[in-house]
Length: 154
Image (cartoon, one colour):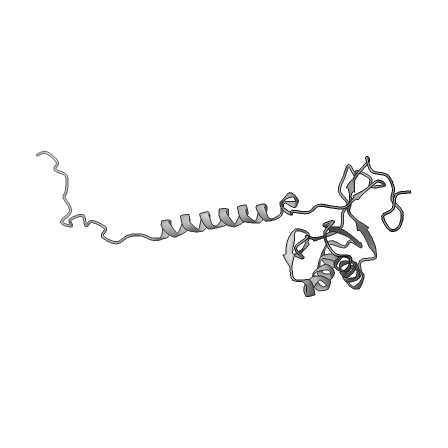
């Protein structure tokens, strides 16, 4: 007597439902990748259209200063460490960054077309936030001559 395979009385059913779990997994992975890419693109300092004023006495630095960078663009937008913020929130943002980074240095980067009152506002905000050290960023301009207090050549 030969052995016969036992057949199950059940029939194989086709799955008629769509399983959305793998689809949702893929969508979430793509969303995370997109968010990471967008955050890296937003932190590039070169992305800010900022023309610093020239200075003869400016010194090129091999290593960047470890401070909180306040950038003021010519159109009036203000960035703290490359994140755009509203003007009234500047003191609060600087104070929270200073507390988290334990630094006392604020680096003011203002476009050469920015009115002086905006730069003074950023300096006041840094002082009110408890930052005791300030630096003004400029471009190295070795070809120009020193100017007098009103912009007259010496």
